[in-house]
Length: 249
Ligand code: 13P
Figure 1 (cartoon, rainbow, N blue to C red):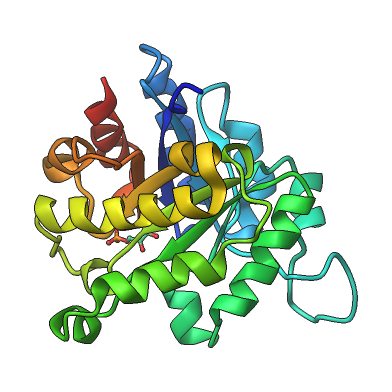
Figure 2 (tube, protein in one colour):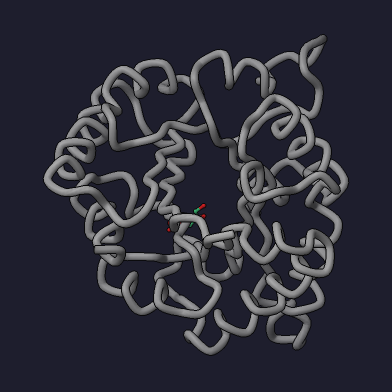
């Protein structure tokens, strides 16, 4: 099986109101100048998904930032995977470290969400990553590999799973790991994916996330087993996000 196209995904987090949709429109226009060498995804807040679909054009996919593990029911304020497919989403991020921290999401909870997403035909972008204290203690690899073992459902295949390695200490800080550190973690993630899912695991995309910018994207995206990026701050503006996508020219 050929390695799938890289994926550059923007996570808008809790940012964006109607006036910011112009950035998605502009991004689609920029991408229209020449086919990008990667898939391009924006995950706006739930409130903007419908409107984002109207302006995303042919070049930008729209996804979501979270979903519930159940398909429907008495869960005030939550959104199900079925609601996301109903809106035309193809991807949903689960297990972002901000959800693990702010909402106490465990590997088991994440697996339930990813499972619900996959059963609805969505591709789950499953985030993993160590804290600074865990890295300083020399535990980055065991932490990340156990997240990969415990957060990814047993039915994972290339079409329904993307893994995103986001060291917590690199998110929104302007700090990034060395390329050697990225290579080491991505190789360890790949090893577990192959052990669990065979050929599919060999081809599941593994994204790097954490302070990716146009200035460092080319270097980070050239590391072995880095199959794209999950971008926060730099995805909010079309120009900077496009600058990252150009790493795949
Ligand atoms: P930044 O790119 O702002 O560091 O955020 C990364 C991230 O958390 C994407 O999910």
